[in-house]
Amino acid sequence: MFKKYSKFCALALFSVFNIFVLSASAIDLDEATRTVVADSAGNTTVLTPEQVKRGKRLFNATCGACHVGGITKTNPNVGLDPEALSLATPRRDNIAALVDYLKNPTSYDGLESIAEVHPSIKSADIYPRMRSVTDEDLYSIAGHIMLSPKIQTEKWGGGKIYY
Image 1 (cartoon, rainbow, N blue to C red):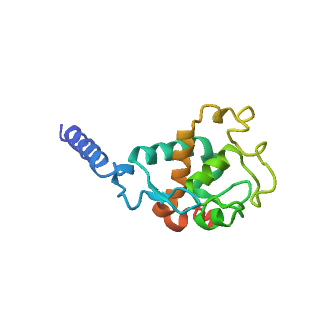
Image 2 (cartoon, rainbow, N blue to C red; image 1 turned 120 degrees about the vertical axis):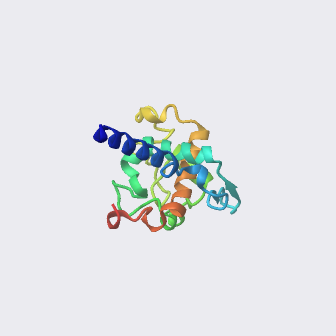
Image 3 (cartoon, one colour; image 1 turned 30 degrees about the vertical axis):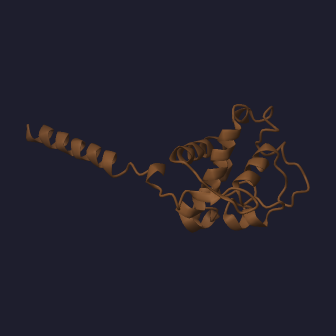
């Protein structure tokens, strides 16, 4: 009898722990953390907790296979860290520029379209997952990319050192 009671108590404590302690989510991020650069003029925007959660979920579902942790598996020299995004041509270090890239991707130097090898709205016929992605979804994904370095710090885009 004691054995069954102790198992029940352990299960109850574990459940309470998961509910109260491990439920940290986008809602726990303060406004300053959720503030990201919106456009090339340097204007900022505050992502809503819903946009943060949605962006993370969509990023993991549509981009995570190749960009887990902000790296690029097909080209480890180019990541999604702030430095790499700011050195791209055109710069991709704001939400508007990332949304533009997700609609019509170009090479890092901006000279060639890479829509046939990178999932995008332009190549939705090749990448079926992109068919149902809306502009709002793209905004949330871009917001996740801009927010992740603030949360994961140097691990985001750190590559083999961390993953």
